[in-house]
Image 1 (tube, rainbow, N blue to C red):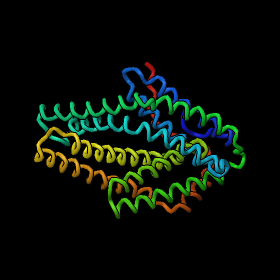
Image 2: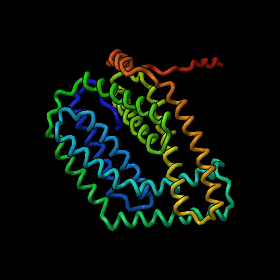
Image 3: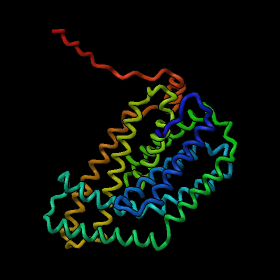
Image 4: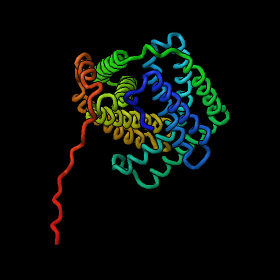
Length: 309
């Protein structure tokens, strides 16, 4: 089911449903991650965990001190899966740089680098298996599903959700300014986390606002994808520097090419975010005005009826 609150249902009931939906999906991915699509399941599990964290942050006030414990559990789970997912994302990014003609490497050179990074990913995956990371995360998620349903979420209302959107948007704008003024891997990654949370909140209220925030939702998705690609390129740069079989001259040339592409991605992210640079208070007013509106109809292309014979 879609990651959105269903109109006409109590917010407390909907949040519990979505939280259960995301933690169950993450658990299923981790317990079934033993087939050919093992890595994809791990990456999907991380996405579900991030969505669950966004839900928890939205209800942190009614949860009180219990929020910090639950959020810490999800953060621990996400960080434990991070090295596995990132190691394989590096391989996917390497393949994308060749497909998109970003890196121009001889076949033998490219194959040697890929083999070295595959070996690195296998070592990380083996270490995770030895440490029983997935089983530990499944237990954490099961504990969270037992804990949160007992919380009193009746205070969660429209005003609280709109306030969360306003706060998320303000945090995203602040992170954007910081990333653009002081560009680094950390500042852009922090910006991406803020953008992702705002995107999740827009998805949650999609049905409640008649899907009239669709354009903003798509813009946030595009921005998140751009910042995600930038993160992957930065990870590939670090992997090449640490694991490359190349000579020092070849490593420098590859890293310069990747950094040039990262520079372009940063400029693209800045352009994409320009359309979203709305004052938080104005956005909050707009969301309140759209709340409960009739779903927006999609344009229908007219066609001529065929003439009868």
